[in-house]
Image (cartoon, rainbow, N blue to C red; front, top):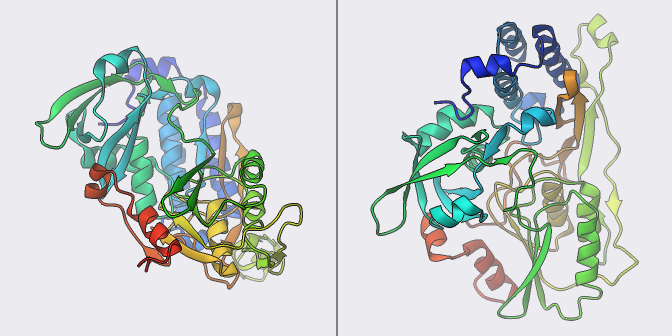
Length: 426
């Protein structure tokens, strides 16, 4: 069963794009990716065959919602965690999910939290309840068949966790039926309404910046987004001089977007020496290569020499011990931070390999206010080590298990604390 299935009669009535506009959108996605996408060596699908197949599909009568799903499937072939199709607001208002925060651990899906509304106050979804089935279909089958093909990601781990997070998405106002089990109890049914559309603010996102403290004088800085310069300002306000910080954990496990510039500004306060920046390059198409029977843009690149980032002089640096936490959800600018942190030799990276989706993103306009985005720069570590598609591997690999989740344990954080306080860490 499709997670975004729409009754055919309703879908055709809601159609906004013409067949010609759908074809133009498909052709634009194909052409923009063909000449601007930075990671063609990682694409395993036949992109030209994808164009032909999707042009045929675009000619069929269909709703914009069905076309949206088909276009997402095409873009997902790139294997880029930064790639996305953005539909116009009227269509986005029709796609929704219930206010449940779900997450996958060991490929099992659990309810972590929910946002209260009238329905949730009555339903009271069980926190840490495992979702066994969606609409009567086993959850693994539901994700594999209905969600995974439309998810853009660079690694299998990141693709699965993204699919789990969005698996309850569907037509706004419809009901999704779940089978849920809490430890030590029999499975029970739970019905919730898809009420929060893609246009609505998601109330369960963590704050972009937060701090905490652990025993042993360890300060934890949690960064969930590098999308806005405010995260740098908050970091500076929280730590004007680091006088009260004995050891620092930088938690990037949920940081999946943003600008590398902001990542460097934070790292530049955690060292008193210049550190090498991540290497980048971008495809450079030269038509004459066709005349010479050479490869096109994939064999020609533009990129500067590897540079360095100086410590910031506007505020005191932190020179104490540091550990950085990463997960499969760590992507984009946060991965650049990981690579630069490793090159700076400032401490240990703990957790799971990152999402393998570095690079700057460009957005390309499609007909009728639709758009598509994907990575247009290729990023590598300062030493030339690539991490696209594989992620930045931690110095200390510490996965989280279902038993950890149910017990409320955070093994990566605990290992980082041990390392910083002179325990067994490694």
